[in-house]
Length: 93
Ligand SMILES: C[C@H](O)[C@H](O)[C@H]1CNC2=NC(N)=NC(=O)C2=N1
Figure 1: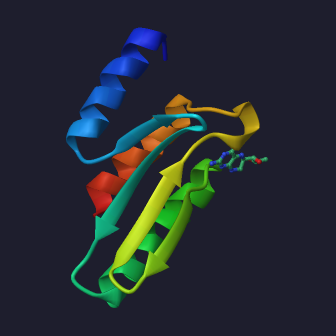
Figure 2: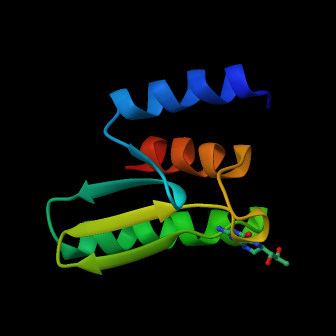
């Protein structure tokens, strides 16, 4: 993905509630569910897919909320893998 496409995708993610930070480079969002069971069910679905694509979220859960931060540790910044994972998380929520 080139810089323009990356910028375009980041703008779309911001409209869907993601926050973009530059130091460190990451995108983050708090997902809120009806209750713990739904939050953990979503985490389970995401975890299975994350494992399949070999790209993993940094996240924490408290009752019905999941704080997510995505970055590519191997490259020390954001890559299209993070953007794809973000989209998948939105679609499953
Ligand atoms: C070898 C393995 O695929 C790599 O270490 C993967 C695993 N999952 C990962 N997840 C994330 N978020 N960033 C990475 O750089 C990363 N690297």
